[in-house]
Length: 308
Length: 255
Image (cartoon, rainbow over all chains, first blue to last red; front, side, top):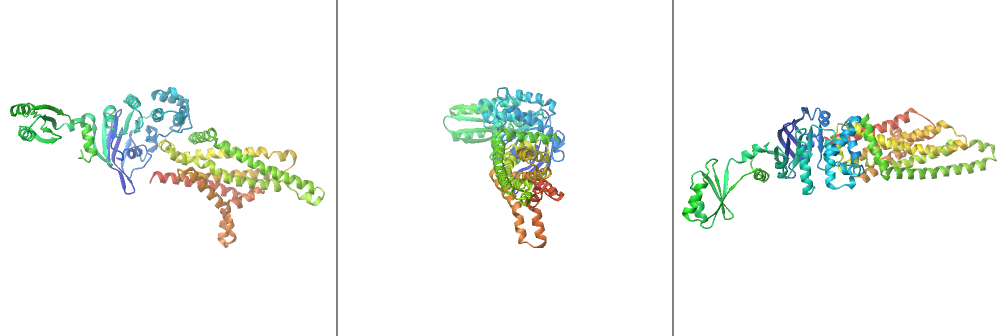
């Protein structure tokens, strides 16, 4: 549904996005994850036709965003990072205006607005001026305006920013309820957002692609090595030496008075380690498996880790 | 076409649900009313004095002595007030971030510009129609010629349209409304008085400076002279302003 091919965007000397490529399947929710200033907003602005790219191609729903921008704009709903709301309009008036400029035929406009009001949960504030409603409702009006012309593709830039925890949960479940009918890309710098709402993720940092794939793929890829944390009461240096000698163990590091043991997948030496500790009297306190998850991957990537 | 109207309706809504349109129209009417009253009062007292003398009496002309100066006065008030109508049209969208909504919708830049221009033009039209009502009085109590008055109003409308287009252009340059209004006002005033320089300029430049000045073209129309040169001048000025707006918006997006 969305295909990005070696997209590059330069602002003068600054390269905001560099050779970015990824694809999103129809009906999936995909997260664009990265720290602040990673190039998320720029990527989204290019996809929505707000900014041109310096180089590269992208298609949305089979239409090229540079040669057929109007076709793309018709099937695309966009929630920018700064909410595009007119404070002096009521919610209904605003959604009517958006429906009109999104070329919803006049006869269908009323139903379209009613539907988006309902799906964004705005029934109670529909007649109020936008400047008088709370931040959480404004965010929902933002989502409603992106939905009003029933677009095939939704692009949401930081949809939960500035909301309180309860509102975040509501907005997330709203986004999840749109899965299937709409293909969605959402950007965020919060990992939990991705693991809770998305099917897949594109991790970028400083404009470069760091990792991308479905959540299962990425989780599988980071589990190539297995790790455990070992805590002993005494003889830490000797314990480290002894554990290092166990078959299958690849690496033993000291970490805050504990030992971090890594081994080859499938070699599971834990039983042997326990036996060793008991025999040599190190006073085994704890042996806990450490699961490397996407969070570790994200942290690694963001702190200048390797490319995947 | 429908989209232009959608954009225009949104702008009209903003004009008339905020105090902007009411304040501009009211202040405009108060000032015009004052000028009109003064001119009529002066003309009235002149008529009384000159009634004794047949020759002087025949020289009195309400078109030249009331409507002519009135149109000049109105044009100056428009020059001061129209920048206030156009200053927010693009600046505001930029400032509150709604330009991202407009430019990611299946709407062309031309349609957005024309919609905004149309809305401000409708406000101008309503300002001038209210003045039109005011100027019915001399027709009730006297016998001015209709054609020169209509041509004068046409001149105001055309010149106002040019002012609006220039204002829209400056509004597209900045996200600050005050800056936009001041730039517009400065540019309009400069084009108004640029023919003053024609006295010191020689030959070819003299004609050029006279031609680009707002004043010269408007002066013809207040006297009831309808010349296609003047009409073309104002229309091309308006077109040029809107064209520059289009170029500005496109270049910002493609930078």
